Amino acid sequence: MKSTLGQGCCRLDLTRDARHHVAFGFGVHQCLGQPLARMELQVVYGTLYKRIPTLRPAAPMEDVRFKTDAFIYGVHELPVSW
Image (cartoon, rainbow, N blue to C red; front, side, top):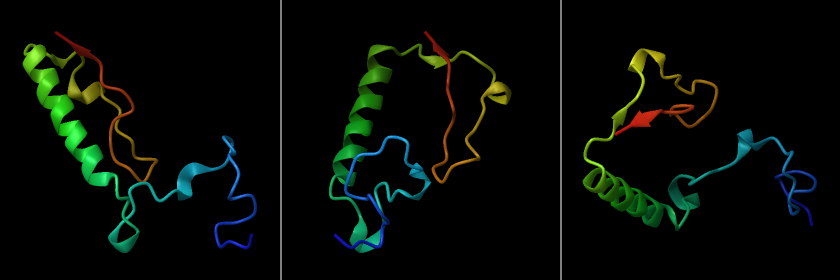
């Protein structure tokens, strides 16, 4: 099978460099599951905050390490307490 994704693109390789994935994609290449995933996150966070209303960060925001080495922005970890 000839592909522009490179040799071995049709087999599972857990050691493959994942920096070139398309994640949810954009435009015509957007993942059909993206709206479902976003809705699930809205439900999860809403439920979490209702069940644990005292949930809060357990570390000062100055100590939280943000991801600057990846395409997707976020935090490496966020310790919480309640």
